[in-house]
Image: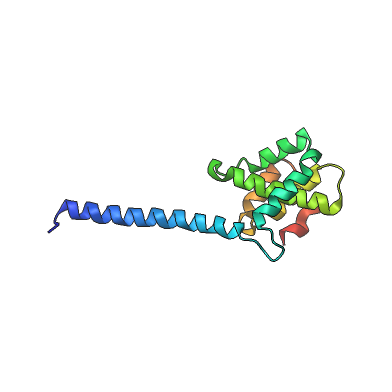
Length: 142
């Protein structure tokens, strides 16, 4: 029969393992859902990769640096995912508009569209720190 401090240690350990496995499982399940093919046969991540590959040659050094500055506030663990999602959205916009190159305007619009609405407060703060006028992009925040 378990009693005393060892019982509490075992109970703590069981709860700790269940919580950490649940958190990890949640993020793995979200990634799994993004990998599932949609009606067109491609997944969300497949489309991101497609747009990035199709527009890779359109990126200039200045636009890459701006994208890096914009994703700096994202925690390092999630920065690569955020960078890929934003670059995919920028590529999608560039292909839709048949842009000859990626511009600062495309980077900002893609950044705003790709960012979840719950993070727009931080997004506005980051853009204001970079002294970027948000009035042309006000419609994207609705």
